[in-house]
Amino acid sequence: MENCIGCLVSLKNVSGFFSATEELADNTYLCNGCGAKTRDILKIIDVFHTGSFQNYSSFQVQELLAKGIRFEKFSNQLVEKYNVLLSQNSAIKKLFNVLWDNENIVHASNAVYSNNFGVLVVTDRRLMFMGADLEIKLPEIIDYNEIISVDLVAEMSHIKVTTSENIFNFSDVLNEAEKCFAEIEKQIELVKDKKLTEARSFHNNNEPSLFDILERLGSFRQNGVITGTEFTEQKKKILEQL
Image (cartoon, rainbow, N blue to C red; front, side, top):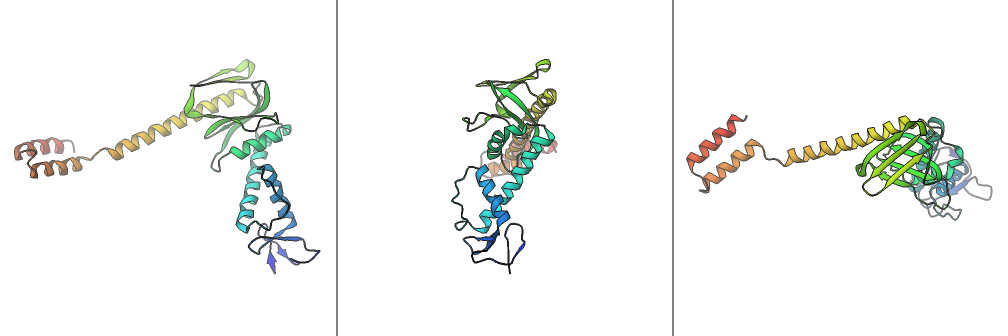
């Protein structure tokens, strides 16, 4: 008896006119319920689908089903935790499509940018805004490394983000504008700290140790670059640093 590669339910009838399954390219099967879920995520990620899964492998379908679970979690988080309006479903889909697999939301809110009502999302990697206008295909994405300053006008729920090339004014930030502002500042600092740590690590990894210097001095002495006396003096100075 075959099993659905999505939900693992046993499939009693995998062939014939009354079959409630779909066969995949690698001779595995998908139940109708998982088939419907897979079609839904294909619509969300804007992939044209003919209706049949005959050209899809079980691995491809499992990847799509996993993406569907991530989208549901992402959408529920925006709506239930951050009170993003359900009417923003189109914007939510477009934001999901640019979200990295290891990217996490730390705050979100409905807001207005450039006279366009939409969704402002603060992640641990970037700041993003997606307007509800159907003609807008991609969100505004702001790299924390590019941000020069962030300002808040609390009484107007207005956040101003200044980069080296642009000024982004987000007005009517509906969900806790002050917290949104604080999270943006926090993420900027975390990114800066990470860069500083990486720079220090790179410097330390590329800086020769005292033992490397001693070895190099020994090589210089053997090759006649320095005298034995000079070697002894330099060695003494280095050992004093240990």
